[in-house]
Image 1: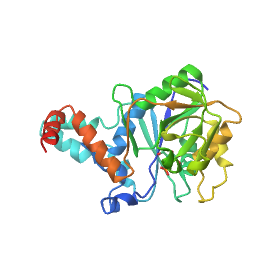
Image 2: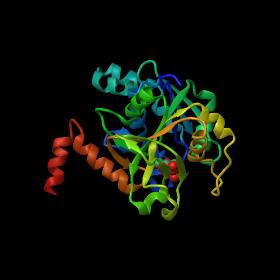
Image 3: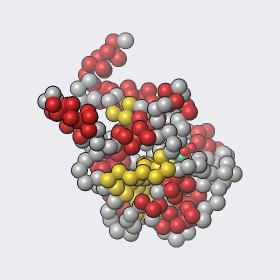
Image 4: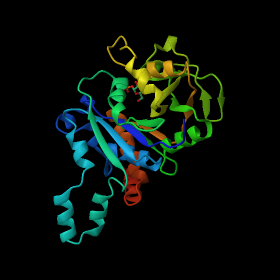
Length: 289
Ligand code: G1P
């Protein structure tokens, strides 16, 4: 494996039913946390880590995501005509220069591994990143994908971000068997998808960031669906472990599960408090109420 992360894949085909009715006509990734849609946090993290090719694995109801990352001629013409340069700069900076956005559809809900496999024709490089936008991780000084990229540069290993969770909650996540940690990382011996708490190898759960050897794409082609009928990235990583090193990495940063309402609200409060313009007023109001 060489050192650049050229491509980051964003699986965004899910229906977001937990946020109905909001998601009846708006993709959940377009719901704003303070002033940016969830997907933009994920994209900013990928770009911070050097990605130049962003691959969105979308579905029939997700056209708003492609529209968001496209040029908005009417809006930009209008803002330019009114000399609203600040707003024009905001609209134009959604995708930085030199970054390509590519789209592929996952036409059947066959799991996260299948979604990543759909991106295969668009992935370039010896390794690539995957960001699940539902997992918002706030660490502006050192975004998590940058932490994973640094670890990869130092070790050449594939790397998956992990977090400790309550033992009773391991059945919601991929869970790693990585018995020996040196500082933030430990070499994985195994990984299982959503184990029963009594069967789990640890309480270290995978959070939505992966930096994977491209070999995983060939493995995914031969990974059978699990008992839920889904092709799991977790199962493909377990196979990759037979031939390549994969590390679990305890990241630094505040994680919010924006796939559910409570996590989304918590993210809104935390990022609202940290917001450069609104933070002070918002914190004052929260503290007084
Ligand atoms: C997916 C993965 C799981 C991982 C989780 C992180 O599960 O399959 O291994 O721990 O994302 O958010 P999902 O949340 O799609 O059920």
